Image 1 (tube, rainbow, N blue to C red):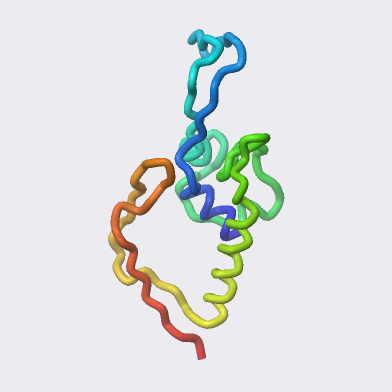
Image 2: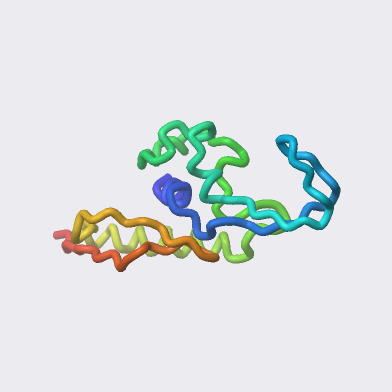
Length: 134
């Protein structure tokens, strides 16, 4: 649940680039076949119409189910990231091993904002305070 919610707040990629297969009309706008489009994963996963209180950290929202296309941190379909399963397993292993040994806290309380590129990165270094568990 924690990892899923973290991916909602900060997906690994900002968006997906795709091309229109056919001429289409979307919200009254004509999209010619072959047009390149950017699907904003960041925008979809922060949409208040899909996620009530999208900006609030609430991992328990994943206990039951979630909107099918409201959570696509690694893309979807035949264009899904080839490393998605590895990334999820690796991050879960790091979190589990780390939480067995340490208590994590952000060393400062400054807000961290995303820098948009191919991937989302923090706008500054994030300093963590690690307190060993007894």
